[in-house]
Image (cartoon, rainbow, N blue to C red; front, side, top):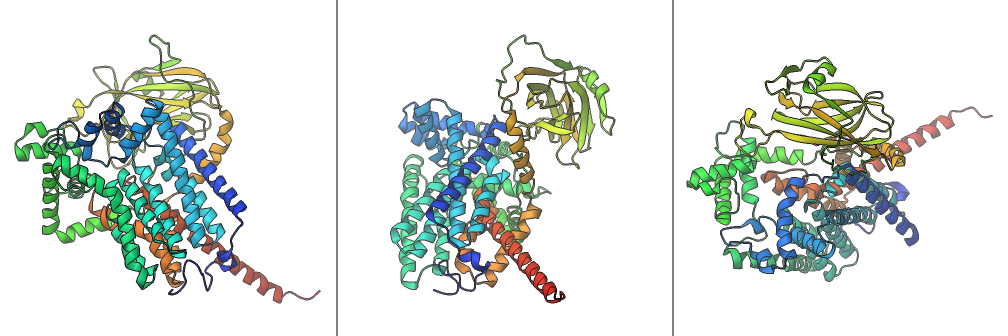
Length: 620
């Protein structure tokens, strides 16, 4: 074995702690603590988001799952009208299959499904600890586990009823199994690692080519005679999971589709989004893709439907058009990939755990229920804080707001009862720009609740005046507040916002419960504020540099293979943080390495300074 291996850390990087090991009892206690902590953080995010993040996307998976729940196995496999209608293969079958199993056993129980999400993701956090424990010292392993448990990015996405968070734990398991196979070479363990990557692909197909990257790293782990056999075992385990889906697609859709469609539409939209001058003529949203194809093929039935009619053919057309742009402008596209790869290292801005406990009462308001207070558009204007926002009462009686300030519009104070659950309803028509509704304790200026980021409807060709009105509901717990303010805040200060606000109603739902959780929530929310790119990225880069200097090639290979894969391949497609969620578990291990290394260097310098000062002290 070359250099420092996973087994022997000669020339210790982290002092004597790098070789420390704990008893199985202590390790089990740490594992339980990390798992329990991860579950608690994720339950907090669940409580804060009774409507799951990205809930609008869950419906298509649920519709697919319900076909199997109703006993139509053939319909689950082939869809309603193959090969033209390709909706059932626009995603892998793993998540609909899991949903069908849950619904079959427990009924239409999304709560059970979210609990499974939480437990599986907490298991992934434990795997982070175990991977770091195999690589480094117990302090680094513990810190890695608790960082992954606390991370608001990972915890927030874990409660979304989408396949993205469930694709990460199998990848962590695959890397852990490869470490075990390195320490004690057994082909069956490498085979199991391939199966684990295949399981991940059943949830999200964007790791389809990851086994090739892993095989490229095997020469750093195994001796010459074991490399080919290990690569063959890994690929065999992976193909065991993937090939049945490929065969299903070939039988019913008469095409070679390894796992699922969607690469073409994300390729086209990604090019369209970065083509600011629109010189390539490619669309940048799902609806505009269907509109573009309807015009290109003169098929009005394509409009508003991406895969329902001639789905496979249209997906191939998208790929060909995207590849044509890449072929004709390779340098431009390479620059786009570099930009995307850089953005993948950023930690997404997500909701943190709120300081106040969640509303526990039902949000259903009975017909004829009297609100605690109402605020008409004209009253809201009179109660507003003076600012740069232009206010106008429209002919329909709503309040029109136009502005650019970070605090677009604030009005209040409005009276509330302390330690009570409330629901505020705001009729809103957003014509331009993103906005967030926040409820603020008027006395302490603390945010009690906030809505998701609200946008105009962008999947239809609607003018600002044609935008639909909707009722935005914001539940909150008053805590110790006796008066609250309502703030309409902008997200993106350079973009103008135009919206219309109707009569606001507030309903008192009853006395608040679980108020004791306010104290741990305050601590968790404070710690989660540290999860920023500017805080973690320097430690990640520092860890990579230190590991390179120490020639820790095996550790680097296995910790970086997933992030490098995403940065090389996913950067060619339109991406969101949830698509590349898996790589951040590994980056948090590197961040822990950088943090502990920095701490030990500072401690070493402090010790040297202390000893140097001691030598010059006069004798007593």
